[in-house]
Image (cartoon, rainbow, N blue to C red; front, side):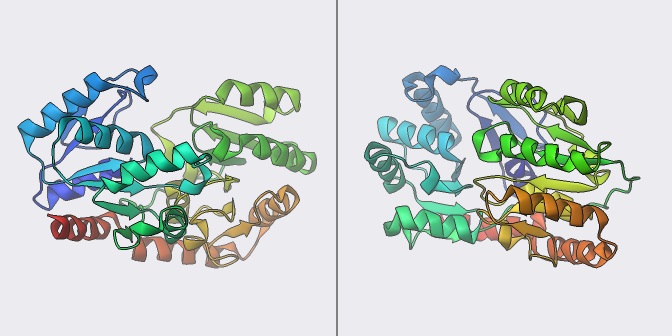
Length: 337
C-alpha cells in the first residue's frame, strides 16, 4: 500500500513509475499509474528462471533509472534476474521488518549476503529495523538509510464509536493472533458485550477461526477477511490492538493515530518510534498478556484520553506525511543515479 502511495507522489513530482507485482494481485491498488502483474506461480518462489528472464527483458526495454524491491521476495527476484541476465540498473531494497528473525541458518545468511552484495542501497522502514539489519550485515553500514512509511494527509474521518476493538493484519505468526484471542477471552470475562474485529487474510486464517471456537469466544470475534474499507472500520473502533511479535513500522498504527483511535501494542520493532508510552499510545512488554489486557481496559475507560489522542495526531501529521517522505526517496534515488 505504501509503495502504491509513494508511486503516486513520485509521479506527481514529475517522475515515471511502474508498479510491478510478481505473483499477481486481485486487489485494487491505490496507484493511478501503470501496474504490471507478472502472475508468476507461488510454487516458483525459489527458482523461476523464466520469470527472471521476462523481468530482465522488461528492464532492458524500459531502461529504468532505479528499481526498488519492496521486501524479501522482490529482492530475491530482482537480484537473481540481474545476476543471470546481466542488467545493470541499481536496485534499492526496502527493508520493512526485523531481518534477524528470518535469518535462521548459515545457508540463509550466506544467500542473503550474496543478494545484498549486488544491491546498491537499503532504505529501512525504522531505526530499529536499520540497527537490526546492521547487526546481521554490518558491512552495509555505508549503504543504508531510514525512511519510514507514511500516510496520505487527507481529512480525518468522523464516525460514531461502536463497542468493538480492531486488529488489522495478515494471518501470519508474526501478528500473533493466538495471543490476541487469549487476551480477548480475558477481556470479555469483564465485558461480555465487547467485540473484536479481525481484518485481513493469510495462511493461518482457518486455524485462528478454529481457535476462537475452541476458546468459546466465536460470538465475540468477527472475521472480516480482506477489506478495502479499513479506515472507516478503524475510526469506529474503541481501541486498535497490535500484539505483534515482529514488526518493522506498521502503517496501521499511523492510521489509528491519525484517526484519533487509541493504540495498545507490544513494544517490538519500530513501534516505539511511533508510540511514546502514555503520551501517544500504550506500549506493553512483548508477551505480557496480562499487562496488555490492563492497558486495553485503560484505553477503554481513560477519561483523559483526548490529550493523548491529539498528541498522536500531531505526531503523525508533522512527521509522516507521504508527500514529504517521497522527497526523501527522491534524494536517495538521485544520489544513486
